[in-house]
Length: 261
Image (cartoon, rainbow, N blue to C red; front, top):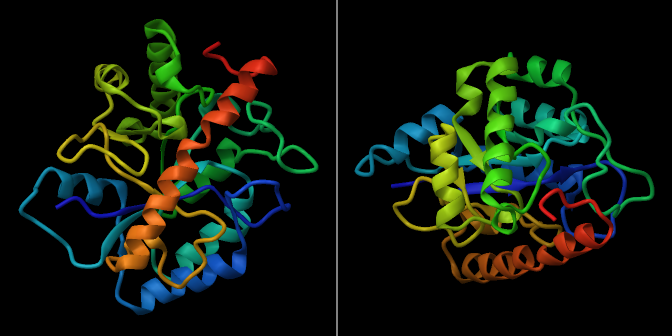
């Protein structure tokens, strides 16, 4: 059985005109509530082992992930994760490590910044995992084959060179946008796991479901780990919100920021 996967983007930092930022207080409360309830956050290697053994399951186990790798994670999120005895996997946009977020629409007063390699390596030394969110955060389903191969391959090469072989095991597709063509390209690039959006495809290791945690998902147990009616409703809302991210790609194209255009 594949464990559930949570996807956070921002924890703390400046306010935004968007839905991705979770307050440090909410994040702390959620992590402590999960730890106190007996949940276990898996390493990427542990998660991968479970995906390869469908009959094996670990009760109350989940994969905690962060997309984009913003600098605030090292200040507001990682210390809390470590405090409760969890670990996490962060998917990095490798061309933007240590740089300002100029690839996205600016939803904050000043541009956000991404973690640098020194910080990534320090937290990797403390048991945190880092893997690919492609090279430039291009919507791969809108890119041609050559661009898809470049985004996936160049990112994986950078990660394995800087962090070692294991950093090239997984990719989280930007915007959760993936189809059969992109999934095949991820496998051809050398990845062994690929993370989709909310929907996912059961049994497909290159289209694994992840549940985003948005600003309204503020209860002690995020929707992605609930099996009640509220959890089901929350996942539906998260799926709709994730699909709305296509508007970001359209705006990027209009502003000349989308590398797939």
